[in-house]
Image (tube, rainbow, N blue to C red; front, side, top):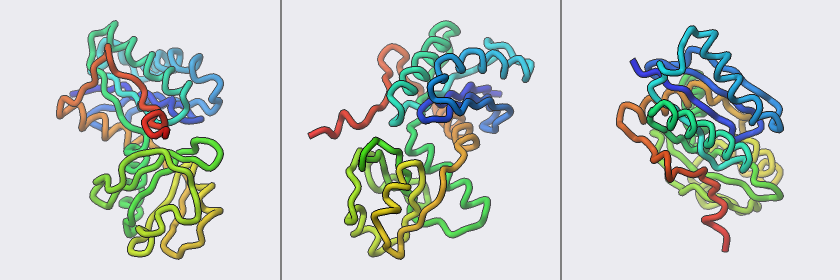
Length: 224
């Protein structure tokens, strides 16, 4: 009966949740990005208390490791590593972009809507975004990277496919394109997707090294 503590401080909204068998059983959120560091530990304590769970009953800790807010990523990773080290529990890392794509996929399936290509976009300031593309079977078909948006972004793919753009970076791209195959949506709720992905990684023993694991800033790997 794996019980997993899930931590996401990668964006302007921080959340901590507890899942059992891949299903969320409780969550607390914070909308003030400046308070992520002070929010995290009290929120974990309060959520465990409300669920009548002890920290020692947690089987693993999952953390969203980026890309996203640099400060937020460091806060979440440091907290997750500290808990894992103290309790000798495994660490699970979940990428922001696959998490967003999974969230969109879950939402579209629930609404029984056609599933186009999925393109999450995270604002990286100015006209730059972190992005990737997943297909309807949750396979990455465009590698995650930082790109500068223009009218020609993904134009070749759009000629043959409908693409759903979403996330806080998609707002900028919506102002640049009028392609009929470009669809847009708001930010999806990551709660169910994070619980499911962390559970699947737990079952397959996909754990990260506590000593060497770092946030995935992504932008550093594509400079120049």
